[in-house]
Structures are given as C-alpha cells and as structure tokens.
Length: 331
Image 1 (cartoon, one colour):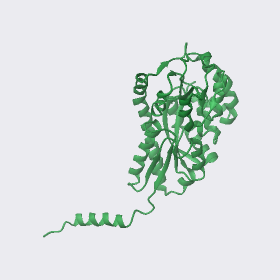
Image 2 (spheres, one colour):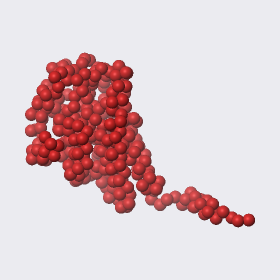
Image 3 (cartoon, one colour):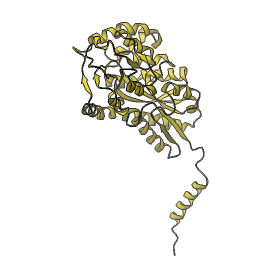
Image 4 (cartoon, helix red, strand yellow):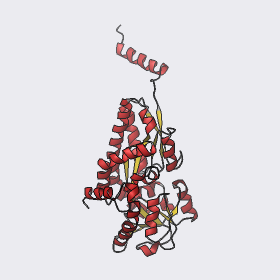
C-alpha cells in the first residue's frame, strides 16, 4: 500500500505551525473615527485585506471604528509615541500637529475629486507625508476620498449666507474651518467628533458639515433634516501609521504597508464614484431635504478665500506654495 507523502507532509506542516506559531506574527491596531459603512471603514477594510495577503497571512489588522480608541486627535498623539499602530482620520485633525497639511483644508482649494487625486497622489502628497513624519511622528500611507463636506441642520433650509444667522453649527477643532464660518458671519462651535451625534440629538448644536457618506454611516439623518450642497472642503481622510512602529518593521513588511495603502487609495476613489449618488437618494428617501446655494457659491467663495487664505499662507508653507498648487490645478 502506497502512502500519500504529500498529505503527510501537509499534515506535518500544519501540526508544526500549530505547535510553533509563525515567528514575530503581529495583529496591528487601527483606529477609525467613523462607523462601519463609512468611506474610512471601506478604506481600512481594503487595506487590511491586501496587507494580510501581501504578508502571507502572517500579519493582520484589527479595526476599531467609531472612535473606540479615542478621538481622532488623540490617536495622532498615540501614534506619535508608538502606542497605536494605525489611525484613519480626517485631514483637518492632523493639521494642528502638522500645519502644512492645512493646505488641503483651505476653503475651496479642492474643487473636484480630480483635484483631490492630483494633490494627494503627486508631489504635493509626498511633501505632506514628509511633513507629517517630521512634525507629528506619523506617516501617511493611504487616502480615503470621502467627498465634499455639505452642511446639514435641523432648523431650516439654508440657501444663502444670511440663512446661517441664528444657527449653532458644530465644526472640528480646526482653526481654518472655524475661520471659514467666521468669514461667513457666524461663530461656529468647535466640538470633538465623538460628541457630535449626541449634541445634535439634544439640540446643543443645530447643524454640522460632513460628506454624504459620513452623514449616512453616522445616521445623522435621524437628527438632521436639511442639507445644503456647499463644496467648501473636500474631505480627505488619510490612513497614517506610527513612524516609530513603521521603522521597527522588516523591509518586506514596510513594503507591504506601502503597497496595500496605494491599492486601498485607488479603491477608495472608485468607492466614492460608485456610492455617493445612491447614498444621496437614500437620505432623501429617509426624509432629508437637499438644497443648492441660491445663485451658486460665488459669495461663499469670495468671503472664504479673501478672508481666510491670507491668514494661513504662512502656516501652510507660504503664498508661493499656494500659488504653485493653484497652477498645478490649472487655476
């Protein structure tokens, strides 16, 4: 009788693996500010899948969505000191730690998905990655394209700047975003992301701004009625890795992280294209009312760019840098 040597070899290998686990195997922790179903979660899931494949299943990612590991700004601190491996967060929450990333949060700097792709996947994106490494001890390895931050509120349709009067609007703790609303005539309320839904629910604030994908995943339609299609800020949500953690990894694992981040970024772009229109329709079906600014956004743009941009030229790298980016974008 012939023995199946292949089967014996395979069985022995599996047994050996059970007795002697793969050396240095690790499950990395990834913090996400948003909930499952969000653009953040989609990027994180794709990254995790590809990273596991590229490391032959040796290394894995454990995702902690919906702020389970703390606020987005808290996770920057934790990644900087190496107590957290990865974080997926809004670019505006990196800006306090690495001011040059504020370039991407200047109001109306990015006016299309194509603009966002050109900036993040070109020389500008590379330069910003170097800045975050030097300033904050974190490295950008991927980008989630989440769409324009539209304005929502529970009180009334907003179709012109005067309609903002009397509304209490929550924004992140970001100077440029606060300055934008001030240019529009109101003092917005800075508030941590983890507190936002409850504040909207209890009427502490009347409104907020976020992309359609985020409004849906966070179920803001349950506490907000009116949407205004402003396009002042395209929401970019980078995936960052702790630089100290990254540098301690073998070169092949570093390469796997970078390649998985690049592939997940491409996936995020397509995900936005495939889902945003459907989600807008679903939100309308759930009772939200969507309006466009009356006569366009010319007044919104003029006030924001003329009052906010000059105040932040120095922090984002100088007016010459801003002009160079505008030239790159064909403006």
